[in-house]
Length: 224
Image 1: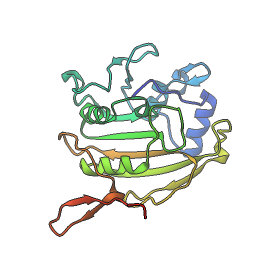
Image 2 (image 1 turned 90 degrees about the vertical axis):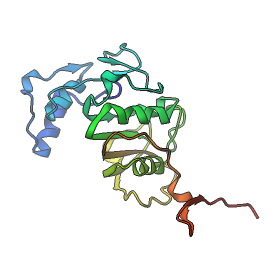
Image 3 (image 1 turned 30 degrees about the horizontal axis):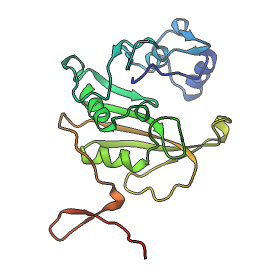
Image 4 (image 1 turned 180 degrees about the vertical axis):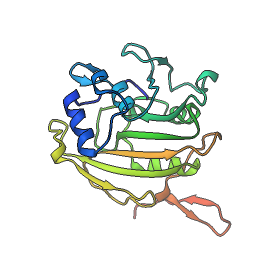
């Protein structure tokens, strides 16, 4: 996982969630660990069936096992193909050089691995360096040959009122989002990595159309 993630649930709350979903923990519940009243990310992912859980960060101040800067233009050999599943629960908006960060994420995954991304969309002002449009993720995954397995839009009621009862969920087709309004949102994408190829830069799908020669061009609108 990118960054050592917070899991906002106590042992009792996590147990209720698993019981409600009918999911048997892969860890003995007596072995579950807590930190500051919440289950640790190692407990969370271990209970879901991951036998080895590592975190990567720009420093080890929060206990990351791997220290690496995603702004870097190359991935160290010992990190290439290191993991089967890469989870980011809100990291990439804090990395200044996003193209490098995405390419490093692809390098870190094994061939056929899965990239699970959670991150803020528009209206998360000053949360990080960037507020993303959902088309960034769909277009980047598409141009680089990924297969989007699932995507979910989560509408949050307010930063100061994060009650789950006020959240709204919708499953998004990657081919057309349209206008989704001015709400605080997060996007979850699960994609399988098809193999190791150089990362390519996308053109926004809203700005593309085919020309007679088969090439793509960007459309701009000139003010009257």
